[in-house]
Image (tube, rainbow, N blue to C red; front, side, top):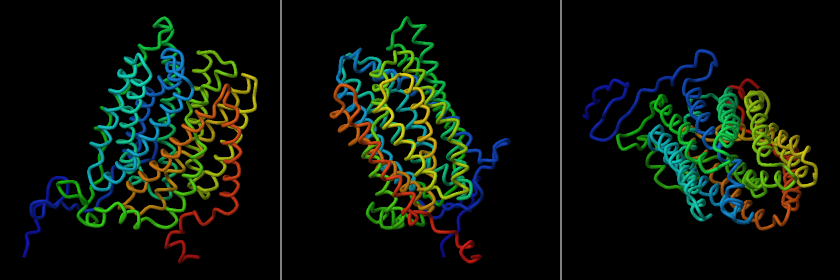
Length: 435
């Protein structure tokens, strides 16, 4: 009869030479003020500093590519499409790995890769090196996002998941408010030079990497090589993992993937703001306004999605998207750009964290990393395609792709509101019996 093994300090038992089983126990407790799990709060601060680093550069990147490096809008669309597509493919792969291996090292590695990419872009003298830098940056995002979201999903219940993801997205986007404003201050301090910003951004990026090590990963049934002892055989095949995901999940993936074929990179929206008449400083400020709107509404949107079907919140966000895109396509006034960028922040608040929570609701706990990774992967492939076609169709002012995308998404949102009920998660078993 095999030995039951001896317990380790973390409550696990080593059985044989490879398999480590853990006694189920609650994850890290709630924070002192939020009532959310400790990991949710820690990862929210990680996101704050990482996004402050990234968004310090994001609103200046279109100017850097099209003016400093002399590339065309089509090249900008290609760079952003490749960057986002790379991130999404990485998320699909890392999501699967997050169900088999420890998640914290993957999260730390992803934030570290993104941090070291920023000076690489600053060194670019031609647009291909800027493309390489963005590729490395988004590769880091691909490595970290799915494992991070899997930790968030594991440390929240279905009743609080929207709130947890909304809290994280609010902190993430608060960093996206601080980043552009800090970047603008540095731009003035460096005598209107853009390149030094790419080197300064390493500082908040490094802080985010350090904070990752405060995450306390929930014990799971993992062997010492990282594979689940209970579900490892099933997870060796990607096709088998996909078959284990519920039909509602696969249908939701199809619908959200179709939407993202019309959802091109925000860099092109920034370019549109410049074309309507905003100067360099105004572009950074309007982008900070967009992120302020996004940050302020993310947490309330997450709470709302815990109380009404997430589908309704998400579809409302798509309608807001349609208003923002069509409005930006039609307007000739720089004043309206400020209003429409604030509206556009509402779209992100109503869909980003809510969408992740919706996907997690439809995914079995042992496959939550895989489910979230595939979701992010499908989104990224759509954004890649959208970035390429929108860049090619941009022309002199970008009005055509904006109006076309907004109109198509309005139709999709209406369908999701009226006939999309089959995509709602099934009621919990206890609720069904009570009914």
